[in-house]
Image 1 (cartoon, rainbow, N blue to C red):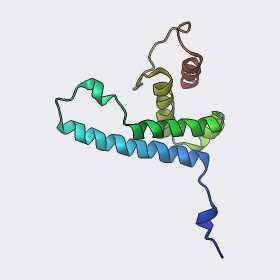
Image 2 (image 1 turned 135 degrees about the horizontal axis):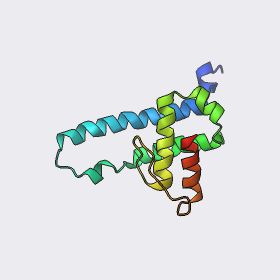
Image 3 (image 1 turned 90 degrees about the vertical axis):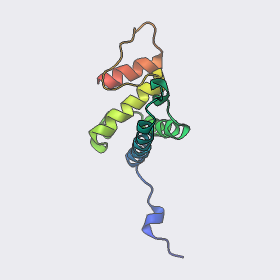
Image 4 (image 1 turned 180 degrees about the horizontal axis):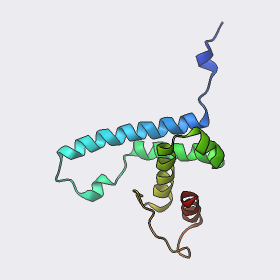
Length: 124
């Protein structure tokens, strides 16, 4: 039995990151359109992510971790907006803070190791 070449080719790690973030962005845009109609929504509810969005964020971060956060690969293979989104997602997951566009100030003494790694990586 012959298999097509498409059945045997797996997407690269960076392709998966792009796909997860793109799906997440598409979902976010459709959510924004629906919340634009409902003007009376509170601001705090707009910052909550759906379970699907959160799962996609975590998947993209796990793929980057699988690459051991190799910045050479991430820089060469990911478009700049995807790189920024990936780092913003890392901030969100490690600090529960949505970062757009500035980086919040954290005291180095009060922050977890994961958050400190995120801050250093983001400043890189």
